Amino acid sequence: MNKLPSPQDIAMLYGNRFLTEDAPSGDFPDGGMSALDAMRLVDEELALEGDPNRNLATFVTTWMEPEAQRLIAENLYRNFIDHAEYPISAEIEQRCIGMLADLYHAPGETTGARTQGSSEAIMLGALSLKWKWKERREARKKPVEAPNLIFGGDVHVVWEKFCRYFDVEPRIVPLQEGKYVIGPEDVEPLIDENTIGVAAVLGTTFTGHADDIVGINKLLVDLKGDRGLDVPLHIDAASGGFVWPFLYPDSEWDFRLEQVRSINVSGHKFGLVYPGIGWLVFREKSDLAEDLVFYENYLGKTDATFTLNFSTGASMVLAQYYNFVRLGRQGYTYIMEAMEKNARALADRLESCGDFELIGAGKEQLPLVAFKLVEGKNYDEFDLSWQLSAERGWMLPAYTLPPDAEDVKVLRALVKETLSRAQIDRLAADIATACATLEKKGGAHPSERKQVKTGTGY
Ligand SMILES: Cc1ncc(COP(=O)(O)O)c(C=O)c1O
Image 1: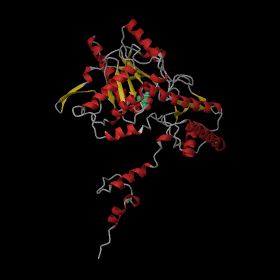
Image 2: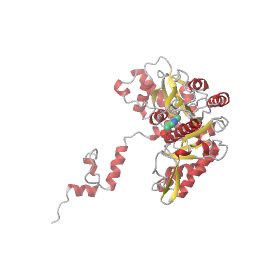
Image 3: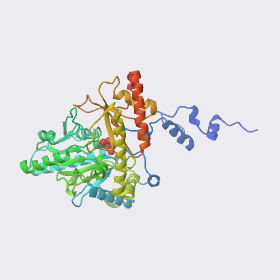
Image 4: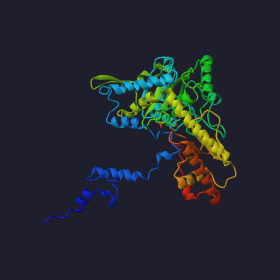
């Protein structure tokens, strides 16, 4: 007589063991499950995750062409750092750095690095600022105990992180109501001989505008002439580095300006690659402090590395190169202009309905709409963010600006490649409907407000 299968065997036969069991969590599982079950367990859990296509908060790429996706999938097993075994991937990294240096008008031969994102690029770039400052001070037999770095309250949190991790005094220019970027007048009073550099942003996380980079550069050039203080300027072009060259090619913010010594950019933002890629580019080879480069004999070949991480996949470097050769200047320009047009279309719709005020409209800006409610509403931006997500699933972040502009509440919609004109119209209509609901009910419940997406998104 045939033995009846055990419940375990039945589960193996029909799959979905996890359907009637808690998902493994906390304790390391004693036994496993079938590959199909494991895949479905993860897949089904993710069904309740936010939908990247309705995420208006993130700057990060949420769509790539199938050909690029194929390249990524086919190269996931390649460890980028193994330069000896994978010299072509390393060469492709160098080609990308060369192309970015060209895009940013580097005057001659230069160097740079592929990173995990702008955060790693900023840590490395700022470390180089610190080391170069130390070199200059030691050459003059001056003390090197109290380095400082100047930036505005409009920067990403990574700049403060750098200062804390690497023992540098942050000198932060506060924002004010109506002034959300910084200029030379803010920087000048903070500079002294211990300033390792000034960081300026091209495309801030908060409103998408640029600091007055031309003005800050002029201040630093004058300072070099008048006081002999050579203070380098680093540009945090995490988002703007793939927008300004195509939307505002005549606007000077890069190596065309004398004191700009290094630039970071996120490939995974407007570089249009999936997460996991950033770039650091120096003006000249000598802007990278030689002490930060490690030469090691790795698997029989001398390898020079300048990174915080070691092993990482090659896929995103290859995907970045794919985008560069696939799109070129013409393709990037076309895509950036399309996003910009759709951002303006959304801005027009929001402004004309009379409920909103745009922030910094008409200035050079990332393809996004930063806006706030007009005075006199019986609900606020946080209520609207909640209502819109509850009604239609849009993730539209609401947040307050950094000090001293923390009383200003902002909503901000990124307009990316996936947001077509039809989607823009739908979004504008959904925002109007959410406003109408709130007019009637007078704001969200406090428990709903607790669930609002308050981060600026990355
Ligand atoms: C201006 C700016 N700098 C740095 C970063 C950090 O970039 P990443 O996420 O690539 O590390 C961001 C991310 O949003 C940013 O907007």
